[in-house]
Length: 133
Image (cartoon, rainbow, N blue to C red):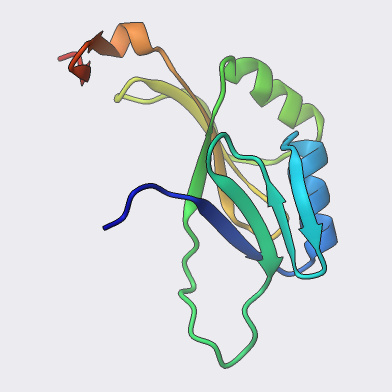
């Protein structure tokens, strides 16, 4: 059965432009680049970029969203705003215990930045982590 998520690939209209956004604007480390694929380090999950699916192939019109976990969401939020990123959902606190903001890449893929206050919302023991009531 499924063991873990290994990679998430976005199909983009302009590979070079998208790669520049993920590397320069988001600050992801490029692992490798081929003519039809660029892979970035995503903290244990590879973030990949590939050309859009060609006409005739079946593909869902809805894209997944990806949340990037950060240590200081306010700082990252301001850095991205200063780089011209347009947020579709401004920085806010979520009822499940995190602060987050949502934006899109140049192809409209939905991305987010999230910070979780682990001590406030979760207890950790040898058995694992549990959400506080």
